[in-house]
Image 1 (cartoon, rainbow over the protein chains, first blue to last red):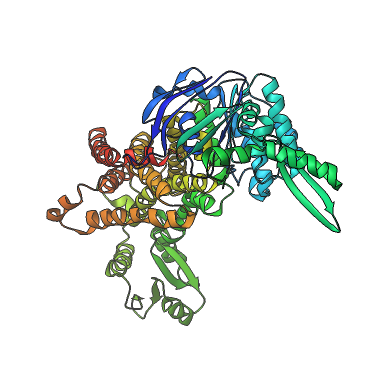
Image 2: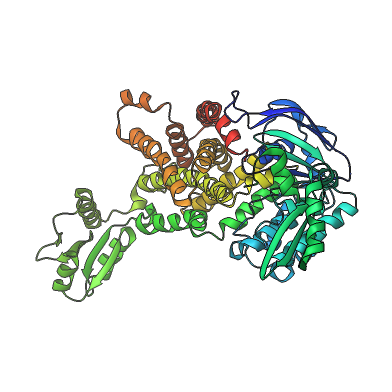
Length: 284
Length: 334
């Protein structure tokens, strides 16, 4: 569905690349998470894939179209949900969707149905300028589905949403993926990536450091820990011990034999911890 | 018209009617026409006013009524008081031998002479029917100041069309919606065309409304339309560039006013300066527009002349287009 080979991009048209030598493939029906801290090159890559930025160097095909010579019809297959909500504030929610649907050549979805899907069913006749930040974000998200895209670009789809709405958004994403939609998810939220993505790519300083499935990454880079809280004399103590280290396993046995255990929890390495381990950078 | 281009235009139109500044621009031609009609009377309203006594000889009063507007007063003092008012009115009162004419002293000389002549004709019993002169005219019933004002208003209307485009682009920039449109099958050209329609249609409808309301409905509308479309090019280009360069509605509206300078300069140059200075205005499209509009409003413009002036405007606009089109394309990328 997406093929990127040796992609470079420089905003200053010199050797200062925002994205350098990026290559990856995304197959049909896959949820691919593009993860990295701010300024890593996520948005630049996504901008090129969606035609918002001009391709300077490299080979990119999206939904079967060569990005070097973008055809307008390509956008009939693509949906794009922006990180920063971008809706017409002087138009109502419904008018926003009605206008947008007229720009496509394919069968589009009913605006009211989409509004209801994202919890804005009763807010369709209110001007978007009067919406809260979260409502605008949901409207932007709803708009990206209007043309029934087969390739869906989602840029931080749950940012700024309260947990219940974020959960609904995640359910919609999962449902669309079940229907066969390929999803390119850009985020710095590792929990969402872990929950939704089949594979993730770590990008830092414009370069892809690693691509694999969250499961494989955890197997390869993650350590299983156990957090144990016990009573030593009158004092409560807490230790975090690895299942992978012999010394730690021995210590755990010792604690179990010698002390009164208060709590004990196994803990799997998070994607965030793996990211930090692999890239040496935090996701800020 | 392409469905998507139409959608862009209708969206802009809908939003413009919800914005006070844009709405004012749309209704400007109607407001301006009313103002022109109020402050600049047509030739039919330009009259000679005469104040006379109510008890005067009815035949005498009737004669003057055929050629002027006569106001009657009870006493000679009333007539005098009326003449002393600010407007131009001549008093005719019976004297000991003949009628005498009196005025404030600041009336146009021609007006006093006209009343004198009327009195002389009346004395000798001469009427318009006694003339052997054949009369014909060009049918111009509009005073030059009115024509000038309508001409300027037409050009202004075109500039305001550009301002509407700028306002709509600024709105898109503020809402960050250009990027959303850029990921649809609507081409960049289609988007620009859709945005341009309001900058053409509003001046066209506004101009026609203005021509009808100000009594110029008998001009060659096709010539006017041709000239208007040509003038709109420059306004549209400036509208786009100002929309792209500004991120605030009032800032954009203020900056587009820069077009008023060449516009008014062209009018002043064409009207006030001698022939040797005219060449300095040749590179300004509004100069040619003003001259062409003047001919059209006078109903003296031949197709050859109007086409030539249109060509000048289009050629100058093409040069401007070549310079700023890349900036417009670049500015609409995000």
